[in-house]
Length: 236
Ligand SMILES: Cc1ncc(COP(=O)(O)OP(=O)(O)O)c(N)n1
Ligand SMILES: Cc1nc(C(=O)O)sc1CCOP(=O)(O)O
Ligand SMILES: [Mg+2]
Image 1: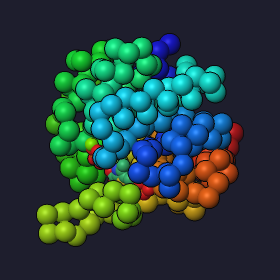
Image 2: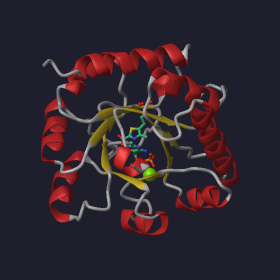
Image 3: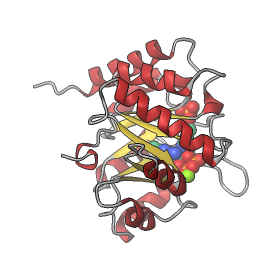
Image 4: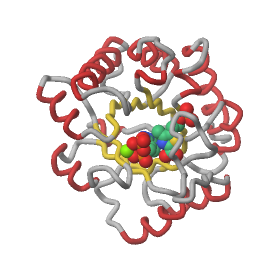
């Protein structure tokens, strides 16, 4: 089974060097994987292409050292060029995450191949229409958010007048129920949000700062994974 077929977005870490308070991205990825995180996305709006390739290599090495190359997916945000370059250099990168102003997902699929993971985000109100109008077959999951405003991505949920739309739990539950593909929810998500989020039917949560800015990232990641598992365990 390839990584696309095995994809698990239940505990999804998004991380870049601007999020780690000067600490090593690879070390925090190791902490997250050891805690049980299932998916990693390298996302940086400040790193150069060369830096992103290096970060992606270090992330793939961290996943391999943890013995999880066949279980934990490694994605890169936005940068199809970085993924192609990293793959060319022998780095195992499993896929890409793109939003509505990024490279179109069908172009990503064409260049990355049938086994790659392609995640897409769209605003919830747009997503409901989107689901009915696009062929979701090339897409593996929808990234939805924000639950609340977050300094990590000040433009998320922002309208042209500068106001910010956050997602209510009922919006999230509606998207999860109509989406033909799995949904992962993020944006301002903290530990205490997980019990309510688990009830919405989404397949997982994604976080940046709840892990990357924590005093002890390993402990924070462990608490998040445990909380999600406790709240999504089947009762039968
Ligand atoms: C899992 C996940 N969901 C949503 C996003 C946001 O993507 P996008 O809207 O393209 O914004 P940027 O992350 O590129 O600023 C994401 N990265 N990951
Ligand atoms: C990468 C990203 N996408 C978002 C969306 O709403 O689409 S919010 C976000 C950043 C989430 O960071 P934090 O966990 O620190 O709030
Ligand atoms: Mg993007």
